[in-house]
Image (tube, rainbow, N blue to C red; front, side, top):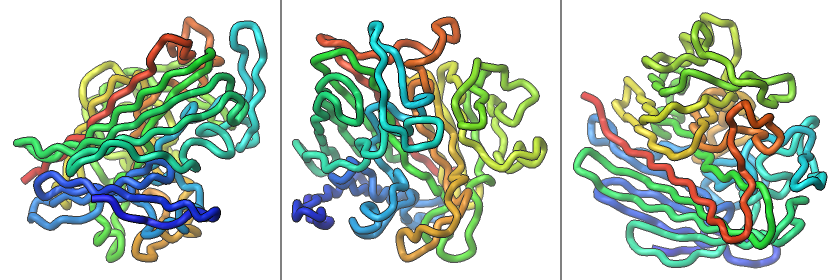
Length: 345
């Protein structure tokens, strides 16, 4: 079902599409091609919203929080806001002191996407980014498809990104939901930190970062707070190593990522074809932004698990193994992620 979610300052309508599969439902809005809500049952059958966001368009316009957004052209950070492509230096506008973050000052999360084909369980959105957009070369045509499926083991939300270009340009898209598996009602009552969730990530390496959060050479997770190979609670790892939170990429080895809230029983399994997973624990949420239901979002209310290429890959030495993120004419960029949900008893 399509409905108007709000209006842009220039009067353009921002539509929302409501998806449903069994007892699960989701709402996708055209602004930022964002997942505005995802409602799922817990182990007692109580349905609640498990992603952070805003109740109206004004919240998204006033605060660039990336809640549920489609992020690009290049997710995460490009060091110094510059790179060299085919022998030519490209300079981008920086929106952090030492980097261009999530596509620049006006990335894809700030755009009004076009809603295309949709039905009860799926929707496709598209965007054309002209040559020179945020300093990036080439005209980029982008599509994102959300599909909500009711599987025997539980609901699954699949997200597929595709893009084509008429000139070489770096492309690395991702999805940026803040997952609060405890549910909105838990956050509104006695908040429970998402650092108490159980997290399992099949990654033997991670990317250390400098003071500007720019990745350095891959390092082993052994004996670090980044070792989630056998599962652990982030709060336990953080306390053991005296760090405040996560905003780091784990280098995936293949296999599903698992996030589980032991109280509600909600379990999320993430499948992806991307080489990295940015784990972000909402460290910059400081209570200044009010989200759904007027709740002031605080640090660690939710966890972002962002499947993506390695940050700053366009500037990385080739022997680091980050891969080539340059899309060229005739190629099709594609990434897929699937968030499958279940409940533990």
